[in-house]
Length: 182
Image (tube, rainbow, N blue to C red; front, side, top):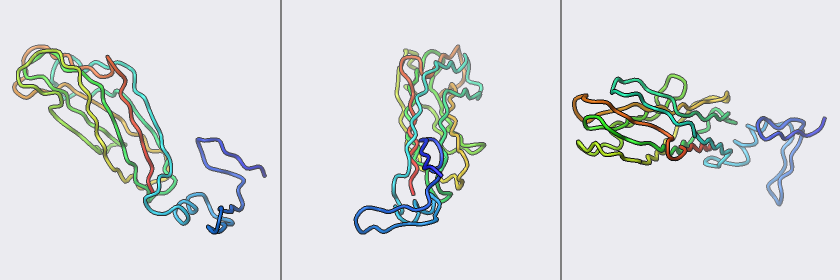
């Protein structure tokens, strides 16, 4: 059987592996076992990058409705792995009474991170173009594909009044980097 490396899935056709120097060799182990036994805890196993470029309007009011503006997926090598999510959202706050944006980052039905009142600047109804960067360590406990969904909604620091005009990815693209850590 030929050795197959496709960059998106498992390595197939590998029956033994010899490491350089005095690191030893492995025969008959799955790649997950190699990662756990030869690389060590805390090692970086894979990196996935996603760029979110679709401009997304957050509606015209503060109604609690979240709008999806991007997703990123990774398939962990080990169920014991952690996923470090580094996410930068490019957004704007405009109009409305005490306008702001709130973010929710979800894996399946689980919220892994949320923030309210981003971009809040008292009752300044000026147009603000902003960047929000977060880093979150998640433990999905699976070797199945994991998809993170990035959502946002208009928010306010006071009572809802007027028309709100929050948007994501209008002037620049948001970006996500997922790092699998042993």
